[in-house]
Amino acid sequence: MTRLHNLVGVPAGKTLAEVLPAFAGVTNEVHVGQPATECAACRKPFNAVRKRRKSVRLFPAALCQIVPVALQYGLCGRCFAQYQRGGADREAVLVAIDAYSDGVEATQ
Ligand SMILES: [Zn+2]
Image (cartoon, rainbow, N blue to C red; front, side):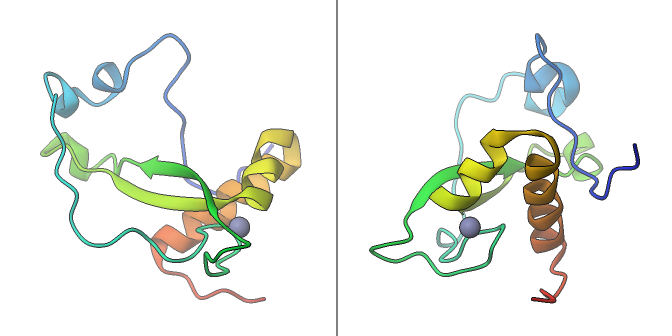
């Protein structure tokens, strides 16, 4: 099956530092910028009804060879539920997050 995104999960049983050695020994983190105000999958703004339900972190593999960096985004409840259904539903959320992270314009 051809994947439509470039996201790879940390393999089960492995730690992030085993996959990306730059993270070995990292115990503190510094947040830069403000939390995202919109869902990284559906791109709708968070508000009183559509709340941030889950955070996702992407670790740019090439950059993480040098310095441990993570990009953190938020997901609304609807998109997180879609992710949890797995299969094609999960893949669709991952495609949307990957495009969001790359700064691709939404077509919807
Ligand atoms: Zn959403």
